[in-house]
Image (cartoon, rainbow, N blue to C red; front, side, top):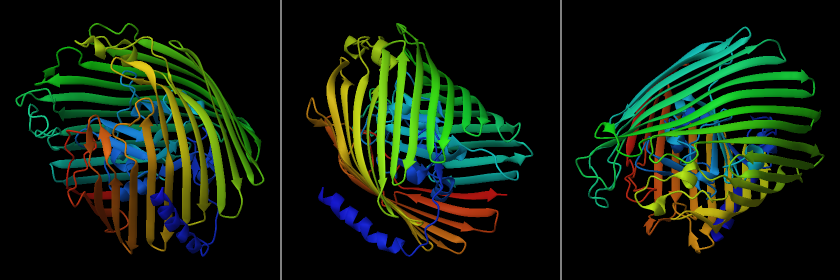
Length: 608
């Protein structure tokens, strides 16, 4: 804990500088923390927003890379851009993190994870990350938290945007879009193309039977949004997203002459009706479908055995927000989720669909210096029956700048179809277990927050205890896990200089076996500095991770340094350069897989 106290002291030393700034209303609005509009600095759950400005300034291409600098987030990736990625939020498993795209589930019901590696930032407006158990808001899979990605929408006068760039490793990217508002109609259309030759994904020194050739990636993405306002109180909107990726990868048990690839698709379609019934009642009705699909190939032909998997999430949500007073809101809603699995796996899954019917309620209210949040949810799963979850949060503002928070919540994660019914393995020990029960969680946290116009400090202690943890092989509900730790983050401005820092000190461990959880470090941190000088903006970033276990192996610690520079040629045109891992650190976060190493990417963008 010594590192935490030193870091906290450093951040607190910055606070006197904040008093020189004039405080203003901090009105950045988020929705993920409560499912209702709420100012970011009033959320009781630890919430971070990656804004559109952050995305543009970063010059980063994909979602996994930009998440790496967020407090509490660790990313494991099998070889580079487009390769299989896992996200660990506050040390929880990747299957215990819910990812939403405009409120829609897009995850796989067979693996239990979401293909965030297929999501390109050209389609993204902003990202909200809520850390901590919020199953009482979203149901299964949110034990570690929720990452909600929002695609771009049109607003203001219609404008055109375009960008293109190239870098080493044969990397190329081009994107274009057009969006805005004409009378009562908002619209936006965005498309992008990305490709890279990459590096050899698997380290041949560790797996000599793997093909040593480079493993490239190709992605085509498109998103569109259309909203028509009948009047100030009623609107109807439709949105579409599709990401199509072609990925080359290696097999550790293959031969040097075999090539492997897959075609991956993540898509989403939704219809939303927003209706203000009266001054106090806002109704939202959403009909949506999210799809995750993968087709595997060997030497250009469909792989023998199981090679195709597809999950279709059919979602129907009716959500009502009742404004009880200017600072008090009531949430009432119902949700239907139908999950269908398609696969050529033989023998077939004993069950290939399930239905979850849910009802939920929430309340947020301010009482002078006191703030209260409570949420309740009941999920009726056709496979497991009823699961009840809840959250109780409290905040106390004890000065113009300081606020304390505390919360306690319960959550669960339903087993995947692979956990339950997979039966295609030649060795039965690796097959599913239909007797598995959902994992359950109890999460407590306390926080201290300092906020002014230009400086924010957030310090949170969390303690997440998970029971019925699914482990194996053979798969079984036997283990308990405890993940406790401290997050400290700072964001501030000093004139034209911006500074963001984050550090997470945690102890993610399997209590049953008294061992650390794989691919999660006890310490990871980031520091980012930006400097603006007239039309020139420069940035530097440092990412650190301590050692992490990976099975019987240990992944080494790393220090990664990244640099960015951007120059505004005029009001419309901007030239930029990004250099990643300039010291060529071995920042592999999966044993036996190669990192990209040192990379450079130059781009030119146009904004009308």
